[in-house]
Length: 226
Image (spheres, rainbow, N blue to C red):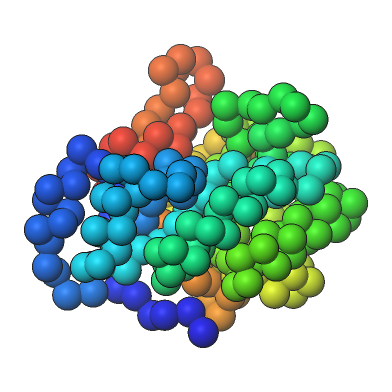
């Protein structure tokens, strides 16, 4: 069973001294596991020191669960080793794709919500969960362009949960950014999501695109949260 947590923060090594000194009841830290997929060294030692005093949540960004190919086997092996080592309270991933053959994109690309794509994401989420021997939370992405979707996003996520047994990470900022960019109703999205499936909630800031002519909001995670 997933451990119940309170409020947490994204961990940045440049603030390690403050994080290690913090003793707030219930405080936990989220990290990107890709920064710690090593066999040893100071980076992993820092993470283990942090884990000794605070629960961790691992938020992956490179499993490419929305890709046509299965997740990279070596990546899953190293991620599973890290999970075994630090015993995080939560593990989450994004549903986009970033890998095609030997080519990697420096970002998570969107997945058209078709029934065929759903089957692929379900299969890849199941592979990830099997490798880690635990359920993971899948995050709703931020959207910047319209695609020809057969499924609404909430229905797609609910069906993913039903078929794979995963949970959800609801990123409230992504909901707001996507609603603004695509002319959708953010409040209706939040009202429609199944709260029983939610394992974690993200809150972060955003900024307008550097090119004001686009009218887009960018999920930058570097602005104050209203």
